[in-house]
Length: 159
Image (cartoon, rainbow, N blue to C red; front, top):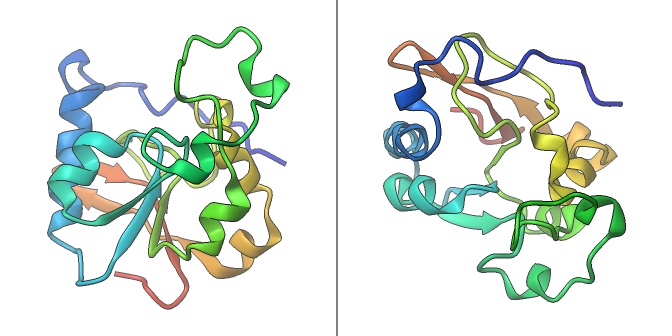
């Protein structure tokens, strides 16, 4: 059952939302990355580039397996996200990423759980509702320059 949370974008200056925010997340992650670390997330571009981590694409933009998944009607109703409508949470969890980014925005306080924005993505919903995820991952927020990155870490990978 998803937790009802305040928006991750609350109280943030407009200039930090979106790509500059993803760059900040990627740079902060680059400071904690260990060789072989990986991250599963939706906004793979700037975060993947600046973090230097192996990236598992949760929506299939660059993942052939997820890209060839059929569309699930519940995730394409009223969709405005071309290329972001597919997912496979079980497949992502089988890849055993070191980190999973569920709430993909910086927040002023740690934000465990999921918010409405994250629930639009099929992989996020399936991962969040997976007993395997709940068993193998723990919330491990990282503070960077006054903001929090709301990561989930494999139990053996806490920074």
